[in-house]
Picture 1: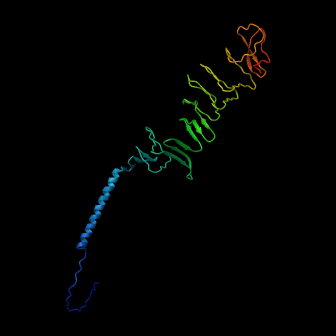
Picture 2: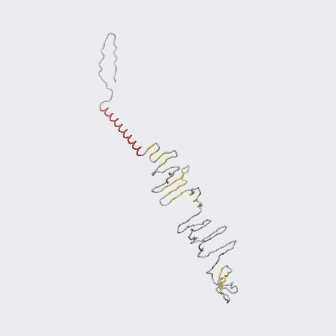
Amino acid sequence: MVREQYTTTTPGTSLERPKNEYIYKIGIYGWRKRCLYLFVLLLLIILVVNFSLTIWILKVMWFSPTGMGHLRVTKEGLRLEGESEFLFPLYAKEIHSRVDSSLLLQSTHNVTVNARNSNGEVTGRLNVGPKMVEFHGQQFQINSKDGKPLFTVDENEVVIGTDKLRVTGPEGALFEHSVETPLVKAEAFKQLRLESPTRSLSMDAPRGINIKAQAGNIEALSQMDIKLHSSDGVLLLDAETVRLPKLPEGTRGGPGVSHGLYEICVCPDGKLYLSVAGLGSTCQEYSRVCQ
């Protein structure tokens, strides 16, 4: 601490002021000054390096007032041009491509699209994997460009809204249960075959069943019986020629000339058989065929 001394004098007397015994220099000198300059120089170097790195990052990442690289910020949202890779889940309200290009979603494992409600619960999921495409939801529907439902699937039924369902597989279509359709038709110059290998085949219709072959034959093959039943109507065979080639032949009746003609007889149980024609009826009620 520096102590100041004050000397009082009377008028007419003179007193010499004492000389300062100590001189204090204000400032930083010596090695402290050199360290300070070195520190300031180091700060300037760090500032220049940081500024250069910032400029380099801005240039490499293509930062601009409208976005970064191929990513542009517009009024409608974010616009991304080119190919992009996402390492974590992407949350978006709408994803669409440009008008003149298609939208491609690609992954080395699978592509999963989830729909969530306000509570965060998954209400619908579409999973495209390497071996199958899975959909989890209450209903799956495919619409046409006009909004018409083409294919609808839910827990109760499968609805196909197209005018025609075409099956091109060599084995056809396999149905484990009943099928309801107004028309079953084969392609042009192809055969239509309805088959039940181990069970029965039933065709029901409230107003009628129409089986038609415009340029071919109709064959009905069965290991056991083929039954044609009409509850309120008649069984009508309308053709130019009706042939029953394998009807059994009954007991020959009395002598006569048949000229190769036969008579169709009916047993009491409805069974048909042939009998050699004669001048009169040759059908016998107790023929061996009816027994």
